[in-house]
Image (cartoon, rainbow, N blue to C red; front, top):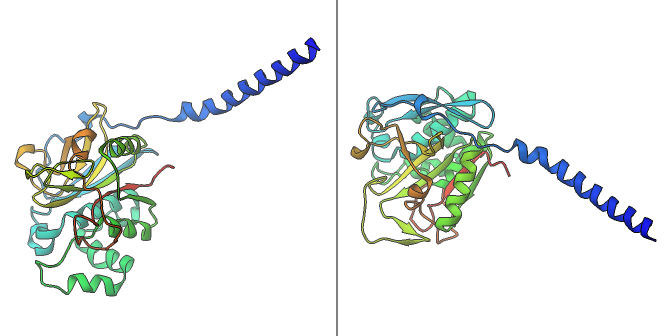
Length: 273
């Protein structure tokens, strides 16, 4: 009897050891992808710049555009509403070789039109320039899917869940697209006080990754005085930027920005889960 019991215990121990040994390689392979801050441009107050960051597989090189700088500000749409399509062009340039030399105008007029459909595209761009809207987070995700890039569009979240999810995703070496607000929020409750730190109203940006110093690398098409000579590439922390995000309160989905309640959220590009 004792021999049989010991044998069963030994069997369970060996099974547990085997399970741990099988799980260990996967855990051992999990790593945090970062880019040395020293390798990133110290000055980026330009109309266009390419930036290489470490990624899940080697490196990715992104082109970042300045919508208020030459030559892009000559296009009235880009100057007024171009943050989203500039960000979309940045993501496409890094994830698909086919689009690495595309301009924001070409993405707007060709890729966006094909992905969303001519009728949807025409309804937005047939309006007067002031009433034309930037592509929404939902529309952004649709265009990336059309281009063969997987996405996960996160519409609702708490500050804690967004901080955890965004940081975890950036650690995989993949980017996050965000919609920033001119009011800070905590779990969807917005401050009455406005701030222009990241947006005059609403503003789309791309979080390219993490630095070896723990900062978030932000690809930004707009000008912010506080950031000095660092304009196309800015730096922040996940905790800080999450305060400016916009949780959706409506289930309505539109391809172009229509309201704070339904056009917020963030997009995880190339999710690993």
